[in-house]
Length: 316
Image (cartoon, rainbow, N blue to C red; front, side, top):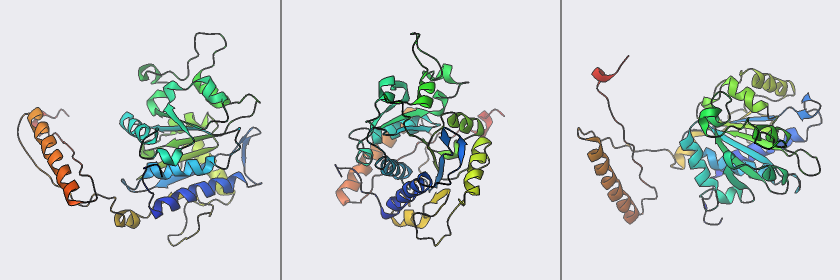
């Protein structure tokens, strides 16, 4: 495992469900089409409690899907989230040496800002590119530090967004594209429409509380899958990993039993200068970490600083 984490059984099962369902649609001769060059994409929502390990589940599922693809047509993965902090954390976990890197071993991992034409044309190397939603939104691209819709200075340059749509290798074949949207409760109709411009082969949306599947064009795609005998969710007692379902649900009980949910929260209140309070909190946090290690507690303490503003200072 190269020093990486070992997935819990419920995480392995969820990743297998996603991968098996992708293959079920991929091999279906009755798979609907969006147009002659683009089959209706695979859609799967991953519903799981915060702390259930959605990132390793998705990473394992993406790798399982990759392993079924031709060596010269390895997939591209666009992994996005609304928050930059989430994107940076995911990058740190997936890059070489990260705690989930062993789950995506064959993939190169980089930010979308660093994507090159060569990376797209090299169909022998699977690649994950991470980005915030703001970096791909046309209305926000000027402020994002990356304009994926803008061509370069050379006449032959193609905008990164157009290159992702084409994603052709030297032979002219089109590479598979998987889109992973983390923190899926933030997905809006304009964002979904923008992502569907890429004509992805799969769209995986993960979150604790997900929106109903009625987001315009995405809703119509989901309806086409329903017309092809796909259902929203499996029965609670379902044991198969291959059923035609649009949703993978992680058992909350399994997450709690695995002790991945915070079971004890200690709240301390203080009235002092912010810098002083944070310094005191860091000292207490360091002391708690050392004590947990000495006792073999089996968990790493975490701390959250919350600044409370008097109601009188709130502008309505």
